[in-house]
Image (cartoon, rainbow, N blue to C red; front, side, top):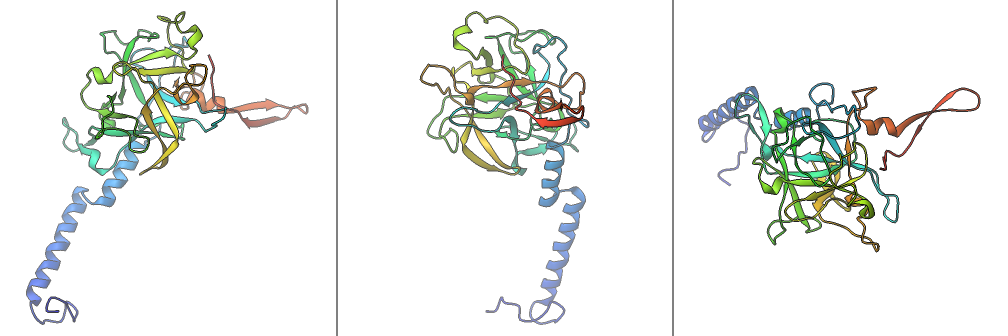
Length: 311
């Protein structure tokens, strides 16, 4: 009971000098951390402001004039959702980051950026921002501007700046390294680009897959994203929901789900979404979700339509 304070700090009893000095030092430390932006509430605010920064400020999705995906394009990787026995809303590949994933930028110590490894998830928000914008990167020496083709190896990299230019990677699952909920093959973002970061685009229809090998990949069309080392396709696990600092999101893993016809299921289907050529501040998928219909009276009615682009 000797350590319990029974009086206010202004009452000078016991070790009153030490108590006053300790409170003054605590206040000075708080003010110093607040000036440097090191408070937890400040870090959370910086994280949300930077990673959710909208399209017009930092992220610019590429516009495909010819309808194909090119190396160097900034795209969104979107799962169009399911319409069969397991229907679900579309979701996009997103970065999941917290305070432990932030560090000072190696070039400018005053700026912050993300460091690997970082988790990824599937968010229902389809608005372009730093979280869901990825750059199609060459891993075989193909120059930027060339078209990405089916069965060709490529990499997915986050944007420069706060996103930290991290690469989407995966590896064989182990007892210690696997997805938290499903225990399947884990997918994450790493700093170094190696063979674990190599992916390839596979045509979604298995009956026409051989004929499309070597053809350019179309934007906003269904495709499979297969991992080169493990030969497992990227999947959105709608039955496994995870809590993130940004709300509830789907867990992502590298696993090929086949139906009774040996064809990949909806969870393995992805769209390379680019900006709308007519309105570049929104993605092409957003324009498809809102369409204007003219009725018999000549008035226009805005209706929501599914944002699924079949090939």
